[in-house]
Length: 332
Image (cartoon, rainbow, N blue to C red; front, side):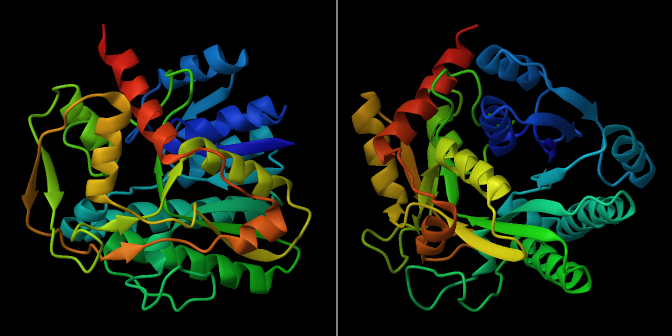
């Protein structure tokens, strides 16, 4: 199967590409390198022993995207590409709507023109807004608290309408929770530029003295210790979930949560990181961020039943592998 992976040089995309290559799938990456680095391609080759065809292109460029589709003759698509920082989306909503929606519409137009009927879409637990009860199931009411989440929900609605008009399409929406961790080799992982928007890369930048202190945004949430609770999932488990979705024999429009089903608070994660890596992380409590909610964790029964999806990596693994990646890539 020839698979187009959009955003395949990014954090989750690169780990999924490794999973696909290890499963002997043929992979083509399209990435504009806004949130990623081209050196990842060499790291993927080092891990798998395989070269990946790569196009440095923006999905918002429809004509170039059509040329790629015409040349490559894809069988299926995994769509990761998009801007993804909650806080930035609140301050720059137009940028998020323009990029995330236009890129997806262009992708769907190319699918239609070139008769590609299978797509796995990278959605997010943000589409559940501030849930009234936990754990979260796929049939819960949908709402959003920030523009990033709204783009994900709008794309889900677009995919639903596309499916209604094309019942031979095979569309999978994966709503995943909070990916952390890195590849066991330490060759690929999460490495954002500047001050990270996500918690784990922020923790490791402080642990490796790249940043002086970790800001914990709010300690007055209705949670076990006042800090926000999230469902952290190892990126390797998440990558495997994408392979399972791609190979799933069940057709139609399907939606799955991918998480562990367990909630962990910010302070619990910081303490676990310090414990397993034997290192101190300086932190301070600051005010809440716009758009953040108290708690969010998944019910993953549907993914387990229909995809055979289970997680095998622990919070300890996530903390060790995240730190291992950054240590290996800062000693230069």
